[in-house]
Image (tube, rainbow, N blue to C red):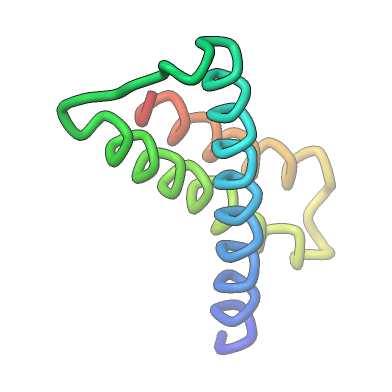
Length: 92
């Protein structure tokens, strides 16, 4: 059990880092597209960052399902991507 929690924390860290990296890259593209006049108000940036972190967790935590060797790979993918996409849809 302790190993699964440790693995889940590792996956959450990796997935959150990837999500925030993509978020920053896309933010730079928007800033370049709008000529440096890309502005947000009403805590929109904070809400987007928190949503990005939640989506990272949503895809990171279910990744522990890949440790189950006795479960078929298509089922593991459906569990991982299904739960991640549901969380993504709820956050969006």
